[in-house]
Image (cartoon, rainbow over all chains, first blue to last red; front, side, top):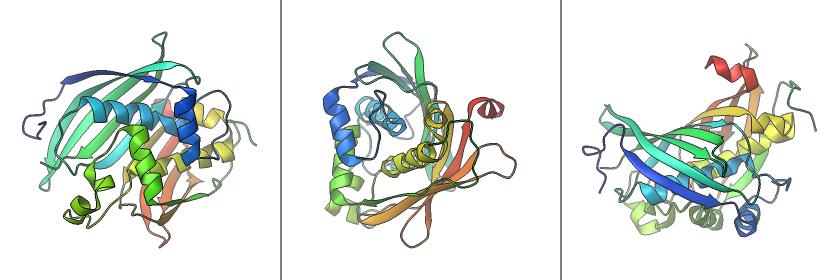
Length: 127
Length: 133
């Protein structure tokens, strides 16, 4: 279990691949039918790549963590059909007013290694 | 639709009801099955006193608002920086919008719920403007 006390700044949790398949796009547009199909992923799908990396690689986590803030730097919108790779690492932690905050950095690259987007998420850690 | 270089004062609002089906589908899309989002019994025991939606579920409405208002380029080369201020609960109706900053350096953006409470707030910057951050 990744507890606040044991999480360490700089810890890399590995990489997660995401295929931007037609099936994935169909599921996305079933939730957001207004996102226009232009051959590239809607900007909000950044979250699919980054949250899957967090959900699948930073495990196990205490139940009940809460997302506190998020920064996304969009460098290019990947094309439907691409395979993305997202890396996630602990960027630090801090205790403020008895609340445990943990920061994670993500970087997502395309098949050719060029960056697509970067993120910094801050999570209120439950334990 | 405007191109990415257009400046307007106010972003087009985008609204969505966040129901349980939407929360469940977002959990599947992101592999985020945190029980605070999908387990009513667990969520009832937390300080939130019930299920809350994933914060990022609503954030797509911000991207949609920016795209509709400023064009595709405005979402393909941008930095979005937001804080989650209040929980979005099941069946909340949230509306995303934004206002051009007085200093011209991007837009202040927000998402409000049906009670007029701001649940998410932040800023989006584009192109060269974000280099100063």
